[in-house]
Amino acid sequence: MSESSLQNENGSITSPADAGEATAGRTKLAAMYDRYQEHALTTPFEVVGFWSAIALPFLYLPLLLSGISTQGELLTFIGLLALNVAALLAGHGHKSE
Image (cartoon, rainbow, N blue to C red):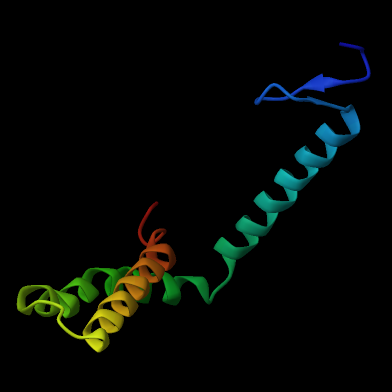
């Protein structure tokens, strides 16, 4: 391996310029995340996401207990499940300090 190339975590060889770009990308992503965390609108979204993630399973529990027999019930269940995943993602940072 020459001095002008580096080996990254997965074993592939990259140039120092590529390694610098990756580091710059991670730094930019970290700065964007910090700015997101400081924004005043993120707290209400986290609160709503957190409590929605707790409440949504109570809505699809009756579907599971009665059985999913029609296509409409299946689509409703999948939609509620997707909404629950989105709420989990939105509310994962609530009260994490």
